[in-house]
Image (tube, rainbow, N blue to C red; front, side, top):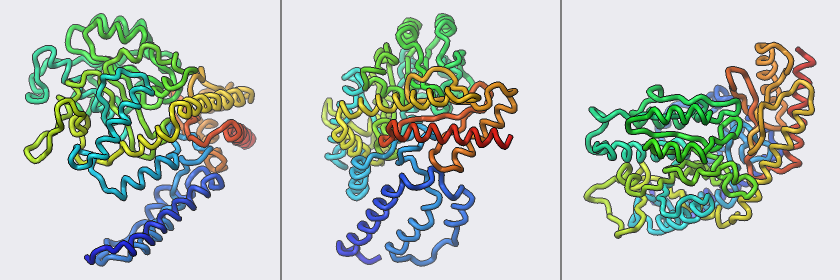
Length: 474
């Protein structure tokens, strides 16, 4: 392959930049849902394996053309399908540079700048979330790996306390670890348990109330019965309702039982960044580990998540990757390869650093408050429409809805499914379908940085319009 010349790179990257700008400029005018589904996109991309190479500019043009109809609009102001941030332009710009710089963030020597940006951004994150400043923080792909990493540290600590070295000896013959977790916990917490050999089903499932919160009395009773190494998993921001477990009661009780407490706070932990919502997280700072996403309320591009562990030694013991060819950081220095499962990985600290600098503490707080206000506005409008039921409280950014109130359960399921499909086909906004307590529901998640009260109101009216259309044809 011929050497790439600078004069060849500039037109290619300029073309990519122009295509990206054109897409973002057009997002407010696009239908909220993709025009093509997976099958159509697969047909568009399918082709025999190329035997010879192609001009990069031609390849890029084909990529833009083939992908366009199958692209979702999470970067727009009316995307509410999942809790996905809007990939703020400042973070995207930093992420473009990260790709162009081609840095491996595995250790200090591989990229001093990447390591330094992570160290500084980690300190800022601990301050923003008001978590123990002595805690260690790793940059991972998202909440799945954040939960995995934190629970690996938990596994290490609780087994070490009873004389078992799980890093050296594995789980064969190890003392049993009891895991207590809410029945409405996120799937990623269960996935982490599966990956760690602790099992998805070999757990004590704690009952949840109608908001998805762990029932406190039942949890206290279960904790009192624990007589072995134990891990308790709590939740900040239930995925459907946004509800928070009772940290002020459950964290001390878990510690009294000798358990490690982990909190899955993928989006809910950002409630600590606002004076209006901070009370929802009272007591969460006393836990032992936390998982939170950057590509949610911090609006970093995908992929970016953070794992925070109070016990730095347990964290590093569970994650350290060492080899003779790898450099060793100085005493007391944060070593990126000792806090995450990946050695070769993206330098996520650059985009995080850029987003915190761009928004500042005040900007993050304003955004959290605005989104919570928008969620309440949507809930109020939907409650005012006969036949639409908002399921439970709206205390954060999640609105859970069921359509066809007053109909029998199966008919309500049908109306809810058809309403969600109609909303998506109308294209004004994109909402999520969900299942709640065995019944169909719609989830309306407000988290994109461009969403304001005007866009929220417009979207609420689109939901009502779609529901009325479904009922007219039922």
